[in-house]
Image (cartoon, rainbow, N blue to C red; front, side, top):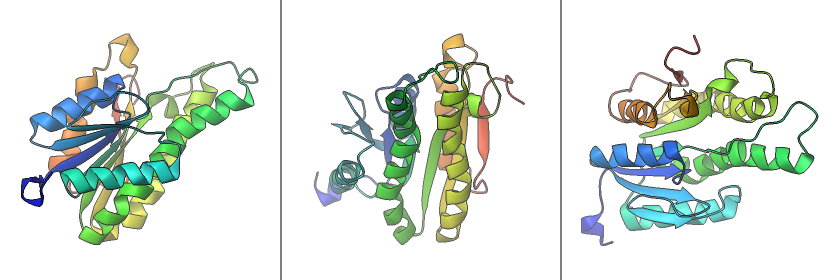
Length: 214
């Protein structure tokens, strides 16, 4: 894409092939964003790329391509969607490593790849996606709660590190989508709010759980 054609509103969404990620991409596009979508398979967006987000170097290369082809990234949304659960003591080490890498690892890699340019530009919005399980104890969900809860904890500290540079980082704790209490569109609307109007929120956790978690 030529320099003159590049958009001034460029968003990057990871987890693009997930239900939540796809809804976020569609909503951002409706708001006039050009969107790069990254995933480990076929995702969506104006520039869809398949990349192993648990691999730092490959994530860096993919983000560089998005910025080169679409323009400087002003909004980053990390939306991992892998759900894996087991009673405590019954999840293998390999499954646990995969779960943690898919959530915390991919989130940190995307931030490491996209946020430095935001810091240099003096502006940017980052929205990480966690889960309501990080806020409410559920039997049999200890592993998933820990993996998603690590994103919540990372977000709070990371937000304070980059806030002085004009980059706002917040988290959405997504509710039980599969139970139809929370729609993907609700999460997407929250992302758009933070991108457009949430200038005064830094390091906050928004619980899109239809009142299931208070």
